[in-house]
Image 1 (tube, rainbow, N blue to C red):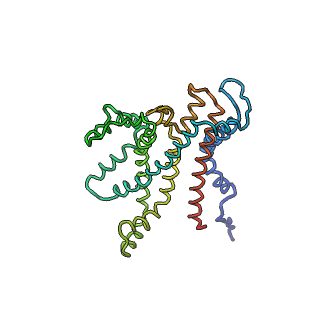
Image 2 (tube, rainbow, N blue to C red):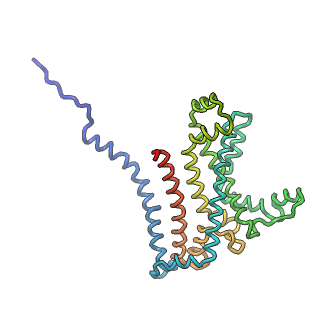
Image 3 (spheres, rainbow, N blue to C red):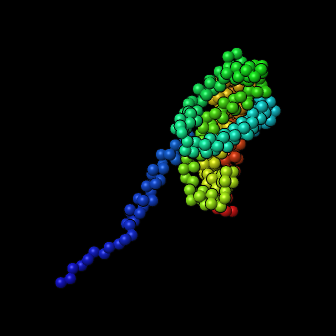
Length: 305
């Protein structure tokens, strides 16, 4: 008497296969909905609002591209745009600064934990605190900067009161925590550097700068990419430090696009929602160009095209 055996299949059941395909999307759904509702939808809403004249209360009036044409003759907008360019160029100094600090902290020396804590400290404190600390540091009467200048025989300077110096003073304040953030990214990246490549390069005679340029930095490309994107976004949306340290002064000389957008749309300067939205669109497009370029560059490097 023979006993019938049930057929066995190694392939998963269709229902289980469908569940495995759907499960990742179910986990992603809350984040995707949050991103669509709080990021993508406001972007398109800003584009639409920039075509209207609206004070936030009454009925909006369609004006087409008038808000954008007005930007072309707005001197305050030109000043804000030029200041944003300064932020973009000088803020990128945080990337090499963070790299070299990370290389130093990656060494095995006495007291390295204390050094790491000191360099990590600026990243964990609030931007408001950073702004207040540097406001006191620049103070022309009791600030540490002028005390140090007095020791070398130089007269006191009012960094935050001088239209030609104020933007650079605020950028220096922003570089303090931004360099710490880039340092953290590079410290994480250095942990993933292949020690076999380093040893092979050392046997081939690579030392110091050649080792850094041809062996270490190529393996830090993911960290460098993130550092570039985050630094550029931080430079373009620099609002809190300006609000705390100068409130756009003196005479509007420290404005940037994000702060000027706030002034036009939400402050006592007029509640011009459409005009503020037009400034926001310009800022978004500038940010989009830089991020798209870095994504395209990284894609070409990964695919070899």
